[in-house]
Length: 282
Image (cartoon, rainbow, N blue to C red; front, side, top):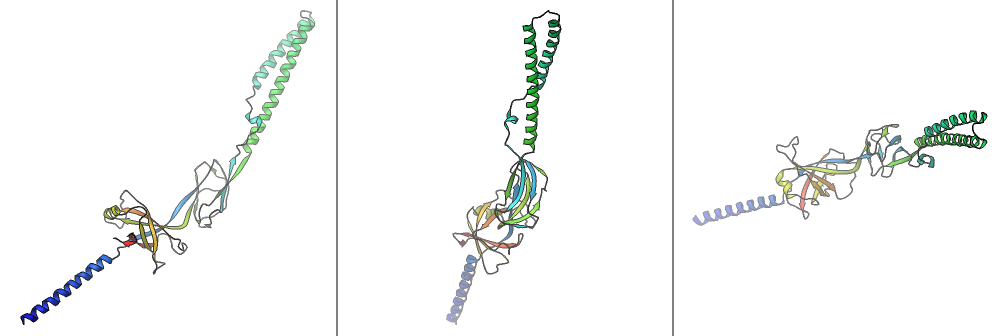
């Protein structure tokens, strides 16, 4: 009886050990997943110079390809004529000198008639008058030419073309045809076709992660497939996010390989598994 009793106890102990070992193995191999938010990166298409929107060739929600012409801007030409670059013409000064020469000539004409001044003196004053007249006329013509050249340069524009830097979708048109724009003004937004992933983790998990670390990503549209990815960066500051009891840290992730981005929708939820040397660590 005693022998059978101890045998039964031994069997129970062995079973318990096996159960414990099994639970331990299951926990060791268990993959802890984190809810992921899939999103598209947004890039701003900005004006490269001061100017006027000549044309915008895309519409909201339109699909565009990298290198596709998006918009054209009229930019004032930097090319200037020699007249525009000439020093300012002193028309007022030339006019004042002409008036002075005319007064001298009027006095000289009276004095010459009365025999007060010689023919030679009279001829010199008359020559000064003609020089002043020519100088004034030349100044007026030059000033008019400069004004015309400045007006022409003001109206002369160069066309600057703006192209899409990536495949994507026009998220919204911010500026319209004819709008004045400054350098750096946002013309429209472009949502990239390539998808990104954001995960929110607690402080303890955040401290174990690093940029470049591998992850596995599962998305609802690909039930039986996991995609490799890597961490781009981890937020250093915690934030209060709805649905989380404590402040969390954002982890931003990129897919390592191209996926069918048209199938995956932004804001879809997926799952992320953090890896260490391609093995699950937590």
